Image (cartoon, rainbow, N blue to C red; front, side, top):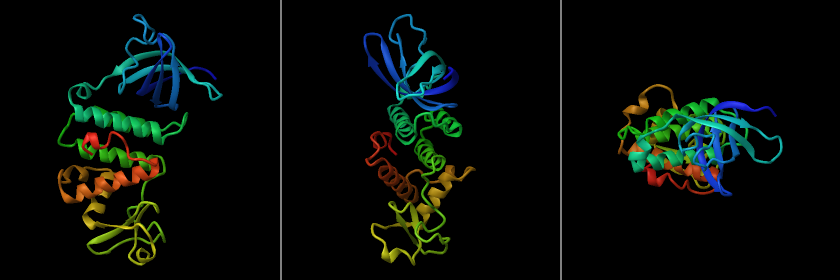
Length: 248
């Protein structure tokens, strides 16, 4: 396969041999890739600091058709996020975003909109008053982009629109979203969420600025964040490692 130039977010790096690294990148044009960067740790390497974790680089990648590692031949820094080096909570939030990109996406499966969303979110993690909401918003965008978004408007069991369900709305993580009051009695492991928390998730998942008006420490946002965490844990088969450290 011919080499390709693309923007990439460095989401993982492992030292190998004496001077090389294996890096995992999430690229805009090629999706996730694991590549060997020969000589990356030499003082005079061809990568010019372009392999810093949680940074955006302009790379040249030689994809391999087999299961072998791709080959990274060039990498130059494009954007570094200084906030991640000054704010520990922001850094953990960045690690959480990197983990989602690594664990939820497939190799060589491009999602340009997801790349753009991750880049913007990393850029704005320094806005401490909005950080928790931004990360939750990215989580839901990631789930939607990858076809894993929980249903927030129709019953995940019967498909009927859920309206006027009272103060509590059933939510079944295993089924993939909210459930109507008619289906709820026959289902196992259904949580009852305050109606406001479902509205908060809808705001976080929707275009516009309604998500900015959610109360940071409010009950609705707290339940919404906890529910999103349960959904991610169910999909991943484990709790996201860095999510609690980021305060999300």
